[in-house]
Length: 292
Image: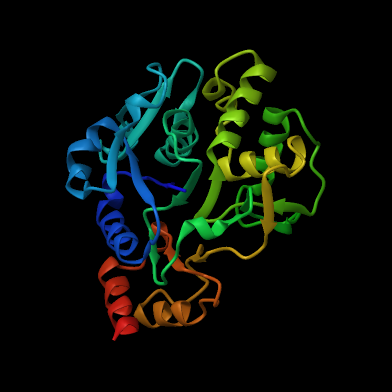
C-alpha cells in the first residue's frame, strides 16, 4: 500500500528540508512517494530535491487563485504573506496547513504521512505499519489540552468547534498535534466535503474565517466527533521527539545532546523547531555523533 509522504516547506527552511529528505531516503521503508508543497516562487529552488520518489508541488496547483503570495512589507521583503478578499493576511505556517489539506483531492495514495521540514528520521520505519487491518493509527493525547497552555490550543479548539459544527469543547480536551502524523486520504476528502456542505462555500474560505486554526486539530476532531472514530485507531505514542520551546533544553550543542538522549523507544525521529534557535550545523554534528 503506497504512502504519500507530505512536507510543506519554504525557502528559509530549505537546508533543514534537505536534511529531512536525506533521512527519509535513508530510513523510510516500503512503498512511498514524497510530495514537497511550496509556493510558486520556491519551486525552482526545491527542484534540487526531486528524485524518483520525490516531487515538488506548486501551491498554485492546490489552492484557489484568490489566495495570493506577496512580499511582506513588515519584513523588508524577506518573508512572504498571503492576501485574499476573505481573510486578514496569512503567514507561511497558515498556508502550509492549507496545502497539506488540499493535497488529499489530488492524490491516489490511501494515506498521507506528514513529515515537517525540521524533522530528521533516526530509525527505520515503514508507514504501512501504521495500519491495523483497515484502521489507521491516529495520534491522540487524551486530555492533553488544559486551561493553561503555552500555545494557541484553546483558539484552535474553538475554531474547530465552529468549522465542524461540533462542541463546544470541554477541557481537558484531546490533543492531536505532532510533526509526524498520518491521515487517511479518503477521510481528509470527506472532511473537506463536510466543511463545504456545512458552510455552503469552499473549504478554504470556511477555514479562513479565523487565522487561529490547526489542521491536526481539525482532522482529529473530525475523526473522533463527526465520524466517531471510524477507520482509525487512536494512540498516544507520538512518533516524533519534538523540541517545541527554547527553554526546554540549553540552547547549545550540549542541550541538543540531552534532547536526543531523551528520545523514546517508539519514536522514529526528532523535530527541532526552526524558531527554537539551534544551529543546523550543530544538529548535523550531533546526528553524526549518534551514528558513530
